[in-house]
Structure formats: structure tokens, C-alpha cells
Length: 303
Image (cartoon, rainbow, N blue to C red; front, side, top):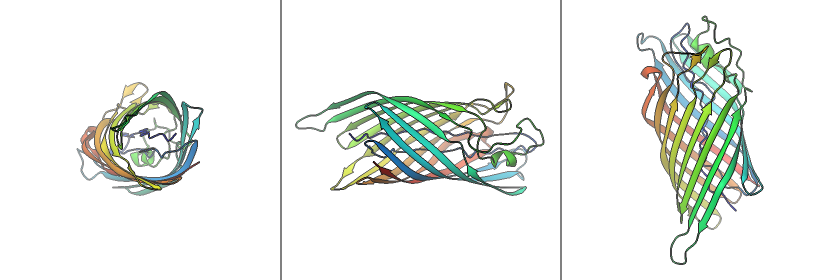
């Protein structure tokens, strides 16, 4: 049975640090799954994610930062029995920061994530003269592992934000809780997803916990051997303030609301997709940091 699931697990570590240099930036462990490929037993694929942010210090516009995050990810999934599903992502980051001090590049393995979901219910109703209805509700959780390089002492006042932003991981083990509800009426569908990420400390520093919610509408165009699924919706993210030894750090955390649009194409066991996200309301780092846009391209193979 093909599962038409939309899964949003945005493991974004928003790194707004205010040490020797007060410019804020966003960490490179940012990824967005988008629409999951349809698969019976398992799938494996490659994804490319892109995002860029601009930061200008409010009290000194000569201090600026342009951050570009590129991520190539190995991802896959496995259905176990009738109700369990395992997912994994292993990213390789290519981070670039241009600021008033110059250009910083750092490439390498990022923080890997493993997730498990359980199908609470799956109901299907068919009718003779009108479109059938299918509903699914998934709940699950996972862990983000500190596989990416993070060698900084975050308590050192001599560390610059450029040093922090160039890191490939957060150095902490973080936990994810999520739930996903999908309803499909004929070829039309809506998916709603909620996720909460709980971060742990690295050298006394804790990145703010994060809530993400999204609603996506899609339409499935079925042909002989090709399925085309255009989709569009909205996503909201809220990140709590970061803390050092239990004390909240100013100019950290914030929220962003984005429009999402994309298309998925399935040809037999191959799935190709592209999506883009553009913010329409955001407030990060006391308004100093702005997300421009995010994009994703992926290909996967089902087995």
C-alpha cells in the first residue's frame, strides 16, 4: 500500500550568538524534508538543500553577514510491519559566510538524524458515485546526533560569530517529537504536521527549543506510469532564546512564517521533487537577521 505522507521535520539550529562580534547568523544544520516519496518497503535518495540569510547589526550597519548554506544529504526510509516507519538523514554541509571581516568556508559531515513514526490509524472509505476518503495519523520521534564538527568552547569571549557560524554541527544530542495528519479526498489532499525539537547543552550552551507547524495542500495527477503532485501551503517556525549556563542570551530566537510551493513527479520506482520556501513574516535576532529563501531538489528510489 502506497502511503501518501507529508512529513515536516525541520531540525533547524538557529545560531544567534553574541560574543566578541555581535552579528547574528543561522547554523548550518538546517534541513526540510518536504513531501515524502511513495514507497512500499523502503527508499533511498539524495537531496540538495539551499538557504541564505542576511544580517546587519542594528547599532552598527558596517557589521554585516551574508550566510549561504548548501547541504547534500543521503536520506532514506524503511517500513516495518504495518505500522512502523524508520527515517534517516545524513547531511554533508558546504557553508559560506561573507562578512565585514572576510570570507569563511567550511565543508564536511553535518549532524545525522534518525526518526521513528507509528501509524495510529489509517481509515479508508469508498463510495460508488463519489470520491473516496483516506485518513492517516502518525506520531513519532527521533534523535539528532552530534556527528558534525563542533570544536568551539562557546563560553570563550574571544570566539567570533564567524567561528560559530562556520561549524558543521551543534555538538549536542537533540530530541524530536512529531505528529502528522493526512486526509485525501479523491485526488485532493491536505497534510498537517507538528514538530517540537528539544535541544541539550554543549559546554553549558543550549540552543533554543523549536516548534514547527505546517499545512500543505496537494493534487495528484495520475497518468499511465507517471504521477505528478503539485503542492502548496504554509509553515510556521518559532525558536526560543538560547541560554548559557541557564541565562537567556539577548538577540536570540524568533519566528518565521513561510509560503511553500513545489511539485513531485513519480515514474515507477523513481521520485523526483523540487520545492521552494519564501518568508512573508519573520522576526529573528531582534529583527537583525533575515531569511531570503530556501530551496530543495531531491531524487529517490523505492524498493
